[in-house]
Length: 105
Image (cartoon, rainbow, N blue to C red; front, side, top):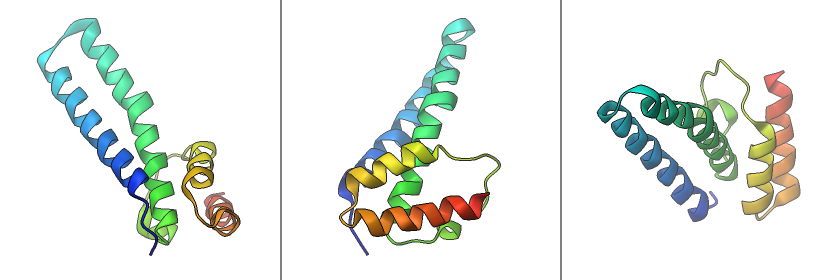
Protein backbone atom coordinates (compact mmCIF):
# COMPACT_ATOMS: atom_id res chain seq x y z
CA UNK A 1 0.00 0.00 0.00
CA UNK A 2 1.40 3.36 -1.02
CA UNK A 3 1.29 6.27 1.38
CA UNK A 4 0.26 9.56 -0.16
CA UNK A 5 0.37 12.07 2.69
CA UNK A 6 -0.20 15.10 0.45
CA UNK A 7 -3.51 13.74 -0.84
CA UNK A 8 -4.58 12.60 2.61
CA UNK A 9 -3.98 16.12 3.94
CA UNK A 10 -5.78 17.66 0.95
CA UNK A 11 -8.77 15.36 1.52
CA UNK A 12 -8.94 16.28 5.21
CA UNK A 13 -8.67 19.98 4.36
CA UNK A 14 -11.51 19.78 1.84
CA UNK A 15 -13.65 17.93 4.39
CA UNK A 16 -12.99 20.60 6.98
CA UNK A 17 -13.71 23.34 4.44
CA UNK A 18 -17.09 21.81 3.61
CA UNK A 19 -17.98 21.57 7.32
CA UNK A 20 -16.97 25.17 7.94
CA UNK A 21 -18.95 26.43 4.97
CA UNK A 22 -22.01 24.41 6.04
CA UNK A 23 -21.80 25.91 9.53
CA UNK A 24 -21.55 29.42 8.07
CA UNK A 25 -24.55 28.67 5.84
CA UNK A 26 -26.58 27.92 8.96
CA UNK A 27 -25.59 31.23 10.52
CA UNK A 28 -26.41 33.43 7.52
CA UNK A 29 -29.32 34.04 5.23
CA UNK A 30 -30.14 35.56 1.89
CA UNK A 31 -27.68 35.87 -0.98
CA UNK A 32 -24.65 35.24 1.26
CA UNK A 33 -26.09 31.85 2.24
CA UNK A 34 -26.81 31.00 -1.40
CA UNK A 35 -23.25 31.95 -2.39
CA UNK A 36 -21.78 29.76 0.34
CA UNK A 37 -24.01 26.85 -0.62
CA UNK A 38 -23.11 27.18 -4.28
CA UNK A 39 -19.40 27.24 -3.49
CA UNK A 40 -19.67 24.16 -1.27
CA UNK A 41 -21.75 22.14 -3.74
CA UNK A 42 -20.21 23.17 -7.07
CA UNK A 43 -16.56 23.73 -6.14
CA UNK A 44 -15.58 21.99 -2.91
CA UNK A 45 -17.62 18.80 -3.36
CA UNK A 46 -16.36 17.86 -6.85
CA UNK A 47 -12.77 18.57 -5.81
CA UNK A 48 -13.20 16.40 -2.72
CA UNK A 49 -14.66 13.58 -4.81
CA UNK A 50 -11.83 13.73 -7.35
CA UNK A 51 -9.26 13.79 -4.54
CA UNK A 52 -10.96 10.84 -2.84
CA UNK A 53 -10.87 8.82 -6.07
CA UNK A 54 -7.21 9.65 -6.76
CA UNK A 55 -6.25 8.85 -3.16
CA UNK A 56 -8.04 5.50 -3.29
CA UNK A 57 -6.49 4.57 -6.62
CA UNK A 58 -3.00 5.42 -5.42
CA UNK A 59 -3.56 3.36 -2.27
CA UNK A 60 -4.32 0.36 -4.47
CA UNK A 61 -8.04 0.12 -3.75
CA UNK A 62 -10.57 -0.98 -6.34
CA UNK A 63 -13.11 1.49 -7.66
CA UNK A 64 -15.89 -0.43 -5.91
CA UNK A 65 -14.10 -0.03 -2.57
CA UNK A 66 -13.54 3.69 -3.11
CA UNK A 67 -17.01 4.56 -4.36
CA UNK A 68 -19.74 1.95 -4.02
CA UNK A 69 -22.45 3.95 -5.76
CA UNK A 70 -22.55 7.14 -7.77
CA UNK A 71 -25.27 9.06 -9.55
CA UNK A 72 -22.97 11.22 -11.62
CA UNK A 73 -19.71 10.98 -13.50
CA UNK A 74 -16.67 12.22 -11.60
CA UNK A 75 -14.30 14.79 -13.06
CA UNK A 76 -11.90 12.23 -14.54
CA UNK A 77 -9.68 14.98 -15.93
CA UNK A 78 -9.08 16.27 -12.39
CA UNK A 79 -8.52 12.74 -11.05
CA UNK A 80 -6.04 12.11 -13.88
CA UNK A 81 -4.07 15.26 -13.07
CA UNK A 82 -3.79 14.30 -9.39
CA UNK A 83 -2.70 10.77 -10.24
CA UNK A 84 0.00 12.17 -12.54
CA UNK A 85 1.14 14.60 -9.87
CA UNK A 86 1.27 12.26 -6.87
CA UNK A 87 1.95 8.82 -8.38
CA UNK A 88 5.30 7.10 -8.06
CA UNK A 89 4.37 4.63 -10.83
CA UNK A 90 2.57 6.92 -13.28
CA UNK A 91 2.15 4.51 -16.19
CA UNK A 92 0.79 1.70 -14.03
CA UNK A 93 -1.57 3.99 -12.13
CA UNK A 94 -2.80 5.64 -15.32
CA UNK A 95 -3.60 2.19 -16.75
CA UNK A 96 -5.67 1.43 -13.64
CA UNK A 97 -7.42 4.80 -13.93
CA UNK A 98 -8.22 4.15 -17.60
CA UNK A 99 -9.72 0.80 -16.57
CA UNK A 100 -11.86 2.58 -13.98
CA UNK A 101 -13.08 5.06 -16.58
CA UNK A 102 -13.88 2.31 -19.11
CA UNK A 103 -15.93 0.39 -16.52
CA UNK A 104 -17.88 3.59 -15.80
CA UNK A 105 -19.26 3.84 -19.32
